[in-house]
Amino acid sequence: MRTVYVNGEYLPETEAKVSIFDRGFLMADGVYEVTSVLDGKLIDFEGHATRLSRSLNELEMKNPISKADLLEVHRELVRLNGVDEGLIYLQITRGSDGDRDFVYPAEDTEPTIVMFTQNKPGLADNPAAKRGARIISIEDIRWGRRDIKTVQLLYPSMGKMMAKKAGCDDAWMVQDGFVTEGTSNNAYIVKGNRIITRALSHEILHGITRAAVLRFAKEAQMEVEERNFTIEEAKEADEAFTTSASGFVMPVVEIDGASLGDGTPGRLVPRLREIYLDEMRKSAV
Amino acid sequence: MRTVYVNGEYLPETEAKVSIFDRGFLMADGVYEVTSVLDGKLIDFEGHATRLSRSLNELEMKNPISKADLLEVHRELVRLNGVDEGLIYLQITRGSDGDRDFVYPAEDTEPTIVMFTQNKPGLADNPAAKRGARIISIEDIRWGRRDIKTVQLLYPSMGKMMAKKAGCDDAWMVQDGFVTEGTSNNAYIVKGNRIITRALSHEILHGITRAAVLRFAKEAQMEVEERNFTIEEAKEADEAFTTSASGFVMPVVEIDGASLGDGTPGRLVPRLREIYLDEMRKSAV
Image (tube, rainbow over all chains, first blue to last red; front, side):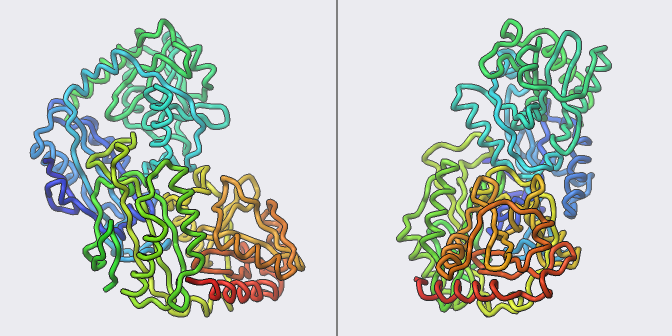
């Protein structure tokens, strides 16, 4: 039985509830973050806390918790649930004034804050990272502000199911002929020593792992090119991968049935995953 | 204190809660309907029940309640809460298997069903319908399946706030230069005896009120043309209006600062509202 956090209280997970009038439930009026835990410590907490503030600001939503308190709750949940490897999910919604209206509730309405852990032993040593992921491409029909990390996750969830039905692991989304991102990760292709990934905009999530990985790639003398690419170009790439807070750097070995290179995770991507994990373990808090 | 309905139970509204792991809360994985009540009876219940089934089917979601039982719960909520004029909100989500995952939970996971009333005395005799609404236009950046009535309502909610900040009542959304619909209603313009509204597609909600109003309009010898129109064309129209389950037929008198006709609700639209209300009162159940 997990202990979870709801609006200042630590509760058994089965007692963790929100009002049916919560705007997170009625209107998807909420944002979230996922922070990984390795060796019982938080990976890039600072990056997630900063992006959380940005998402809240973009939606004119109050932040109900200081960064210091947020860190404290993260650590307490890790402790209470004995998490060595896993993740912490955090969601903040605009709360509720006890009824439903498209108009935002009064300024003094308290946001809802919910946090819970997921224990994932073997997250760093994930067999999927050795095998590599097989992906399909699907059309990107999400809303236009994917840079705000909202809980409007129905289409990414549908995309994951489309991949599963096709016998694959995940889907990359394509808009106007160009790859935007994966269902819950940023997307990259590799040509020789060069990493190609879409530039930041409103069209994609500003991945915390993306920022760290591109920094480490440059430090390791890899080239980084931020530009659009098509699925056709991706199929011809030497390697491909995704990044996310809980997947870290995940090799992609097949796109729409076409194997990349020899169908194994290649050379650059596994090295990048290793660098990322080494560096993030060092800076974990 | 309202009595609301949650998963088979009638509860005081303050005790009506769902798990924080409900996919409606975590992923906006849910659909909804709003049915109006006039004279204590349900308006177009059949239409809403049919669309609900369609939305659930499109998302491969189970329907947890038969149409007969759904009608019974609607009526019981009307009775328990003494609703003469108002509305009934219904939401069904994919439920929860007690954790968070993009992959849908097992087939036997029970959906969550929530229903509550809103008492709105004067709904039919709404002063706003005599004054007419002032609207602004905003870009439509919602996802691509607006024909499925999901709870991904953040952008419509933001749109309503943009209108409010501009001193107006509502916003019409524009995509590729053409009006799609209002934040929570379908959009129409009137030229002489002709009603012009966007044709049904994945881009707009298939309004239950829309279907009834267009039927009544034709019966009343008004012309109906289903095609795209621009904001510029709308500003030049004789009249304009919106339809929705709880707004019925609502005149629009100003678009982006430009008054339509003489700035009053006009002639055709008030007549259409009257016809709609008369007919729907007759067929209410």
